[in-house]
Image 1 (tube, rainbow, N blue to C red):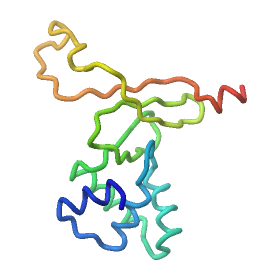
Image 2: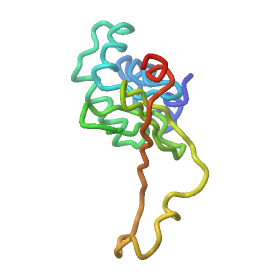
Image 3: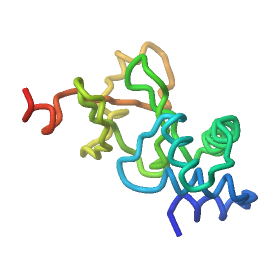
Length: 139
């Protein structure tokens, strides 16, 4: 069973066939799919699943804190099931590929007090950008 499925079951989330398929589609490392990509993959496993059900299920998973919405550009949001291990993202500026990265250090601690302007900082999102090896090879 996938880590995401286990976490959802542990929360007592009712596991319908549709919810299970969406969770299975999101399973894995470095998964950052759009809702439409999730729907396309879910339809391959469960042809009767609707786009609305996929969107609603993703929204519920985000609300539960089991999936993160990722916006790395002005395109569609992507959904990241790696919600319980702090990480940042590395994004290819050409093809849009996204990888999870786990740099050492605490980015909250890296922001000096005089640069916080009185804010109580609770979260940090860091996105590294560059060119992936596949795109670099075709340049």
